[in-house]
Image 1 (cartoon, rainbow, N blue to C red):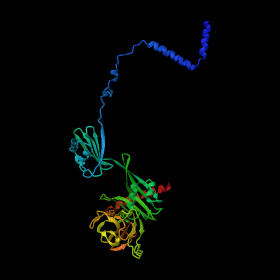
Image 2: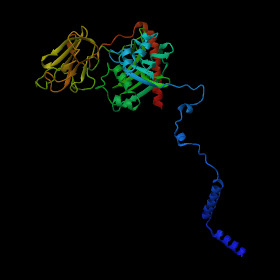
Image 3: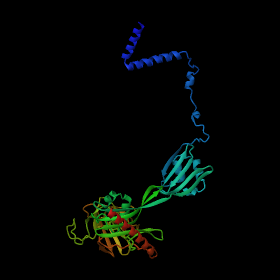
Image 4: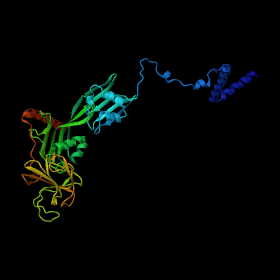
Length: 435
């Protein structure tokens, strides 16, 4: 009988699903576990109040003797404005007066007395409202630092170490000097420098043609491995309508850097070629032109530059304003006398620059007025005249006098420099042609 029962149990378990058998086994073991530990007493000494007790933050801090509690600081920056002083800036940044006095009374505080408009002041302030450090930033590489010490502040000038790297670019113009330059990675500031350098010989609004090209070597300036700015153009070559222009930068003995041709001629001229930067010529110098309003032959003794109303008009050379008023068909007219031999006129102006007064000294490129259509003008434009010994000359073709050539005392040194940098440019051009 017993054998029969055991046989039946064995048959039942052999047909029982394995997964269910596993769950059954775990359940039996759990019941056994509860029965074994049911007689153990739980610790009832921990009260509800103990569980809610706050733990001091000190117990969570490391027990290291070298651990130092650090104060929180914040950095504030301010651009120096007109009539600002170190005292007024720090006051504006929220520093209390007694803490400012401590800084001002420190040794070498006079280094912070000559702060300039437009520069920046960077200040680190702690939770006690004390100036921990201060940095007067003169430029990207120099300034004045102040650091809090036990007995005041240590104030000193600093200059960061810079590195300069030469960059070569060669661009052939297909669209425009500016757009093609940007496409080849030439920075905007370098393009503008190039236009300035050759602006006395080339009218970049009207003279540029597809196929013209330019090559140059310029510097990039780095501080601590980070590029800070695009430096000077060292040499540039511009080929405009088959004519080659070369400009080489050279630092003279007097400390001033200028651009010269390979032979030592100053690329700067006494006059700019164009008085308006962005315009087009609607009417050239023509002594037999039919006047558009009077419909009769009347000499056109200047050049008309079409530009929108309000476009700045610049003086093409240094000189003195001898006329600034209305004058018949000229409308609002400015006349500048440059030397005994040269004078220029700017007509149909909408208005004069506030500083343009009779007797006023004017520098080349100064804004003297704004494009308009006063007088006998059919639309907004500038009428520009160039006179030599009181007689009209064609502003587009007149031979402009050069500025002073390189000094005799600098000539030998310049010739060596020019030969070396010109050779560098030619080598770069040869390498780029073969790539």
